[in-house]
Amino acid sequence: MAVQRKITLLYVRKPGETNVNQKLQWLGSSIGLFTLRDKDKSCFRIFIELVKTSKRGNPVSSDDLSFRAHLTRGTVVHHLNKLMDSGIVIKERRGYVLRQSNLSSLVSGIENDCIKMCEELKEMAQDIDESLS
Picture (cartoon, rainbow, N blue to C red):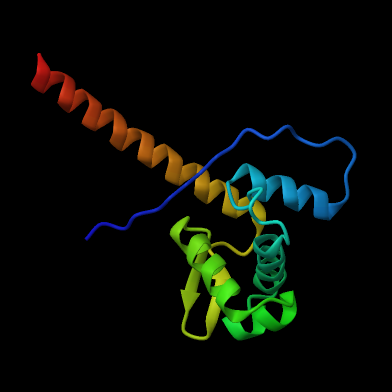
């Protein structure tokens, strides 16, 4: 079975003068991680903890994320599944980490995924066009 990834990119106006939390919020919103439904910013809080632990190269368990982000384990697991579906987070034996250890590499990985997806879409579209001719 092929690996499925759900990549969402949103054009969100880039904020002006901001602090690092606002920049992280913008980045996460632009790649579809945070929505208006996430009123308590639970996904954002989990993302921040994953960014911190990925910098140190340490996987973090759902229980640890729950404790650090002051969220229920169920909420953490829900958001981790969403982050894994997008390909941003991977599960390791001892816990969860960002797919890349820094945000620049993470965005480059998303870019590569998008390019590959678009190439596959073009190939299929050409095949369909030829079939319909």
